[in-house]
Image (cartoon, rainbow, N blue to C red; front, side):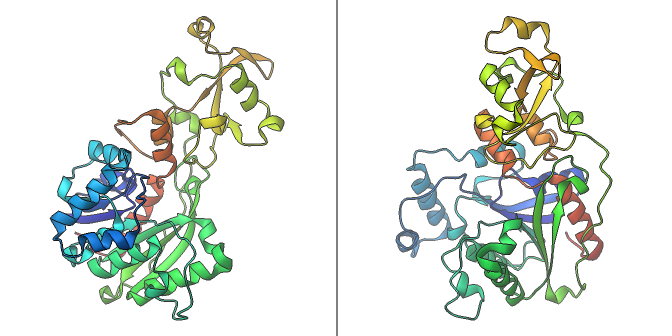
Length: 359
């Protein structure tokens, strides 16, 4: 059975990929703060927990996050969909001791935010990334020594700080004694009707001696976005006159709203709010005329209504199947937009397993 660990876990894209590939796996640990942030300085927190064991440390960190008054909605979604217990969930990567799991992980997956790194040390190694969440991502790799890791991020990472950030990241991965290969993959070329370019790094531990990782070839796109639409859509997703006018008038929305595309634009955390993202224009149903929240207008010479994509549709258009939505719509949209495209991870996973024995 494949031993999986994730950080910046989100709603579990790699877990979905493994499930859809029928690859048995066990979650060793997962970690995500659910977009909650501590006001207290990290060094002050470390001082609080320096003499505590792991169970006590987890309790302190959990209490600090509870004191923010915010719910970890990522955890709520994750626990509703995957087999995991409290002792395997961490709220904050900065206080996750990876040494406990050394040698227990086949595959580690995650993608950290990458703020500017300090390069004053000139080594451009792990120590020069201190103060960033990437430092903790790399530290977890160093401490756990997974056979393989997958790192995902936005393509802007490659040009961040005139390319210096990307150079440091590559140097760090190599310093950790992993053979790495990277590529920009677009979800629309891996079976998903969404324009979503992301940079992926696959690192394979040096001692496995399997050679350079070969990224998967593109696959044909066989479906359109409309193939992922729900059969029944609640009236609350349909737009009033102001929203209808905005999304159907490109010169007004300046391209921020897209309608009825076969391949949708890149989903984002704030999609569907302020009428930004992909929308559907449809022929009105009888009940639409009876609901004064819904505007029945004219589009391309025909009567029409406009609506948001539903959270379930957004999840399906990220490649999720049979996913339980247990959070409010605004949160569900963010979770979908922040995730990794599942079909891309499926192809990467298949390529990894052609080269490395996992499990």
